[in-house]
Amino acid sequence: MPPRTVVIGVDSSTQSTKAAVTDTETGELLAVGRAPHVVTGEGGARETDPEVWWRALCDAVAAGLKESGLSASSVVGIAVAGQQHGLVTLDRSGRPLRPALLWNDTRSAPQAAALVDELGGPGAWTARTGTVPVASMTATKWRWLRENDPANAEATAAVRLPHDFLTERLAGVAATDPGDASGTCWYSTATGAYDPELLARLGLDLSMLPEVAATGGTRIGSLTESAAEALGLPAGIAVAAGTGDNMSAAVGLGLGGAGLLDHPVLSLGTSGTVFAASRARPASTALSGFAGADGTYLPLACTLNCTLAVDKVATLLGLHRDDATPGGEAVLLPYLDGERTPDLPTSSGLLTGLRHDTTPQQLLGAAYEGAAFTVLRALDELLRACGLDPADPEVAGRPLRLIGGGAQGRTWVETVRRLSGRPLIVPGSGELVALGAAALAASAAGGGDPVAIASRWNEKSADAELPPVERDTETWERVGSVLDRAAEPLLGG
Image (tube, rainbow, N blue to C red; front, side, top):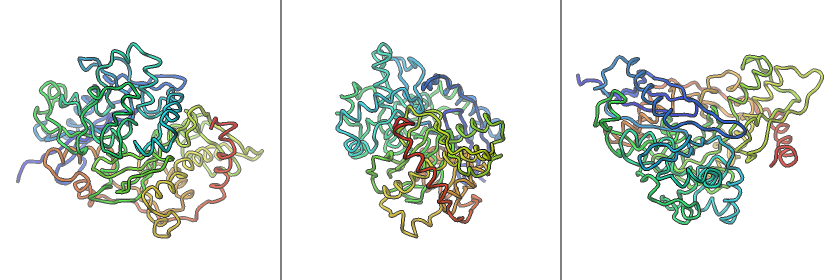
């Protein structure tokens, strides 16, 4: 019997790094090592020193290997999936010049608005990059840096995304993939390359950016001697291009050209996202028209306020997160950090509809409803971007796959079920971002389509399937009415 080989899929998220030690043949998750990150900033600022990510990666890999009980010689490949959009600026020696601006740093909202106007409006950006700049996007952060920290901007020799930075540390090669690159707003999903006019407008030289590999599973190099020593892994193993966290989750679910197409996914985490893999290039100003890690497209809508916002409300009320009931007449829009979808970067939370008999449990339930409504509202637009009619009974009956930390919470699941009226599937495979990265690593190490690899691994997954319930249209319409009426005068929309 041949010796067991494994790959390591790394999920470098906002709050932590996870390293999934995964059996190359079966996809069995043998161990997950974890290490925390530190996020700093106030008043819209959200930053992390990129060196924190590297140390966390090393610690998580060591912990995962130790937990698995396997020898490091069993590892044949590694890939990183990282939080999207973060701006990492490096000096000529490849060292960070300053803390990275994270995806949920909203200080660049004025720069985003200016960029939209300069190119001729939202439609012009959608036609070029697939995505309209908002404060989350990397291009807006680079412009913010040039205007607010010109010394570091001038000293910048290289610009990277978080996953690019870590991949370069592993392989010594400056590389990215179409998926994560498509979240910068300087990469064109129309041409599949960096956009020279946009780079010139932003004051970025092409030489400052990593090469774009064909897919996230492309082998871009081998683990260097120095990285191998830091991680305790064999030098020379395959390093994949890797991708962004949302693209990696899609791979982990088996979504893509060699798997499921046009099947919606709702991710409940620090952010809330709804996305699907599609062969149709999305052209909606309401969505982020990303590329997938495998050559497909990944239309996506993202909200800033999801599980953390609801947990904050629970803490303020002195309740456990599952001590919630439906909100009744109360509506709570938990936009505690501004909002990305809808584009309300300077907004704050809004509570209305209080009565004498409103309970704390209803207020918490209203926070769940506000957060879930915000991301579910984009679902119909997502389906249209995939070339589907949301009113078609076959389309409306397609199950919604529910992932992320919130998918393990009873109240989150029931709130989404009640407001969507759709059947839900909660995948049995845990750590989907890391699992997708593991499939990319397996593709780089042994060949094969990463989505096909993940789909084969998922055949043994025990998914939970929940039938639909009658949609709570009364709550849906009440929350929607408050959002529409409040956006301009109260939320800054």
